[in-house]
Amino acid sequence: MTVIQERPATDARTLISATLRATLASNMQAKFPELSDDQAERGIGQMLAFLAAGAHSDTPLSPSPLVDDFWHAFLLHTQAYQDF
Image (cartoon, rainbow, N blue to C red; front, side, top):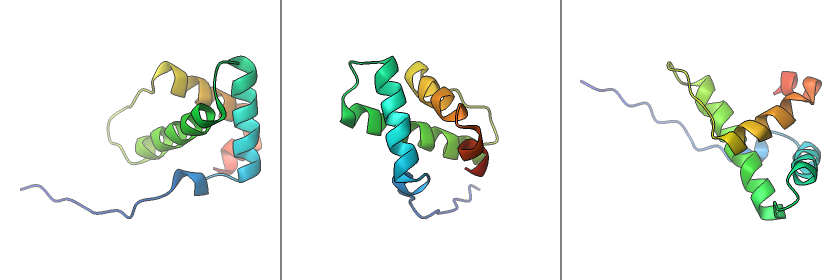
């Protein structure tokens, strides 16, 4: 028998501050100038979704290469990452 636990949906935009989101987007657009504002925002959302999924998974997860780049950009903000 499978037991499914429902979790309320979380808007990834609420997981970090707007200021940090803007900083991460700017950092990634400096590294990848072809990223539009929308793509940078989506990348941050995907990175946060990956981190949230990993926190609730019993098996190791791997991000896509671009999501990994967003994750590394977040890691460079050590205090904000630790607070997260």
